[in-house]
Amino acid sequence: MSSMQAATLYVGLFVLLMLFLKANVGRVRTKEKIGFGHGDNEPMQRSLRVQGNAVEDVPVVLLGLIGLGALAAPVLLIHGLGASFLVGRILHAIGLGGSSGGSFGRSMGTLITALVMLVTAGACIWYAVT
Image (cartoon, rainbow, N blue to C red):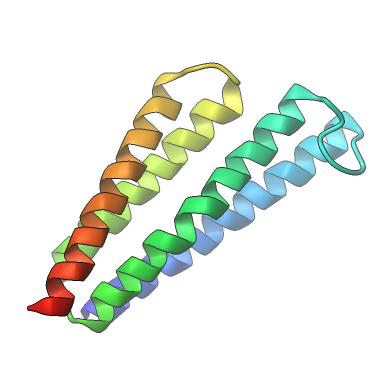
């Protein structure tokens, strides 16, 4: 597998995750009978926040992975970052989706996301200048 193929694999996996989060918002919206906004409904607010957090973070990291793929960074690095990020986003979605308070999933998902973003940024800079 090439670096670009590895990066593209994670693009596909994250498109599936984003579709799942979108479908979850629709599911909660239908269940709670909320046509627009969050209706001051906690489950609706949580599902929107889970999707919103992913919308904030996923595109940035995917751009980094694609950049690393374009620069022929090691495939193992791209898989390490992509897989870790996917686990982090799933943990975050489960944690925040289940409770508006603190949880293991939410905390670990946030931590993993931040670490992957930091390492991705560093790797992009490193491979761009070397």
